[in-house]
Every structure is written in C-alpha cells, then in structure tokens.
Image (cartoon, rainbow, N blue to C red):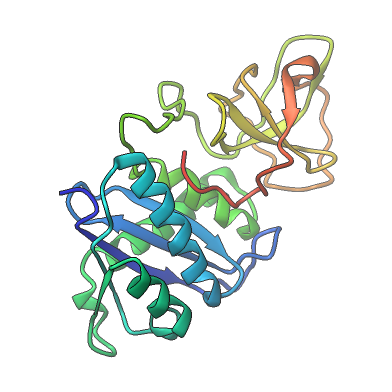
Amino acid sequence: MLLEVIHSDVCGPMKTPTFSGKRYFVTFIDEYPHYCVVYLLQNKSEVATKFAQFVALAETQTGKRVKTLRSDNGDEYTSRTMSKFCADHGIMQKFTPPYTPQLNGVAEPMNRTLVESARCMMEHAELSKSYWGDAVMIKRTSYVFAVQVVQQVMTSHPTKYGPKRSKLDARSIQCRFIGYSDHEKAYRFEEIKSRRVLVSRDAQFMENVFDSGRRDYVQDGAVVEEEAFMEDEDVPMEDYYLS
C-alpha cells in the first residue's frame, strides 16, 4: 500500500559541494512501489524539515497517510525535532542497529545507485564535481515519486547530461542542460556566461558537444531562444523536490 513504509538514508558529506553549497542528499523511498524523492542538503540537521515537506507532499497528492519511517539511528533521525514531528503525525519510527547499513536494504542501495550513476554522468559530460547535485537529481527522475495527479517530467525527450544546446535562430543564448523543470513541462539550463538558471521548452540539443563545465568557455553558436525562456528564480539550481 502507498506510504505504508518510507525508507530513508542520508548520503554525504561530499568532498566537493554543489555551487549552492550542498554537501548531502537525503532519499525518501516508498517501500511498495519504490518511488523515490530526493532533497539536497547543506547539513544533516535539515532532514527533519525535508521529511515534513515530503509527508505534506506525499499525503496531499495520494490521499494516503505515511505510517512508518524506517532509517538508521543517526542523530538526524533521532533528533527531538524529528521525533516530535513523527509523534504528532502518528508516524512510527523504526531504526536499524548501529553500524549495520546492510539492514537498511532499500535506502542504502538507492543512494549508492544514485551516486554511481551521477559519477558516470559527470565523467561522460566532462563536468566538474560541483555538478553532482544536478546529476543526482536527473538520475532520480528514473525513480521519482509519481501518482496520477503529479505533473510528469518530459521523459519523452530524454537527453544526455551536460551537452550545450543550439537554437538556430539569431536571438539565442548558449547554455548547458542541467535537468527538467518541476513546475512546467520544460527543460532547465545554466547559461554559460552568467550561470543563471533558465527554463525553456525551445532548444536544440547538441548531443556530442561538451564544454567540461568551464565557466569561462566561449563559443560562437547558441542555445535557448531569448524570447522563449524565463529565469528560474524560485527554485535554486540543485534544490528540486519533485519532477
């Protein structure tokens, strides 16, 4: 049954932070369908807040109630804030014994898969390690928590991680693809020169062109038509909740 048991684990700290200073990510995985939601974190202390956000989202969208949270017994899960939230919402907490990650048999493998896949994506795109957050979130779309009323991502047009885009129009902007928008059926790009995060549906993919994530890289050509994008101001570059 949906939301009967939620498995969770924190991964990090990463040696290299994302551009917005994130060093961890936490996963919340529904045991029955194995749908997964990922949040990027600056500190482990944010886990309770992110779990509250997850519960609100999941329960509202499914009409079901979260009943059990299963995790290790790290401080982020045994904190007073987390314990109070679970008690107030009737959520039972179950912990694995110390130093037994193998007993957290859903969340641990998921985190390992996300990290290994993100590493391969960055190596393929020749991007710096600071892009690990975006790579994790893109891979996460394969496992994303999805119900009928949740807006779907544009998975009908998958593309390689990292390549620049070109729109063959006089008014265009050179960008690199970093993911999918949470709020529109559109792509998310990082503008090469300014590092602004843009959202647009209109772009042409240059699948075999990569720039190794260098901020000072300049090349003639274009990416996103200027009149067809909006700047993504509400959601930081790596802080997605659900696609």
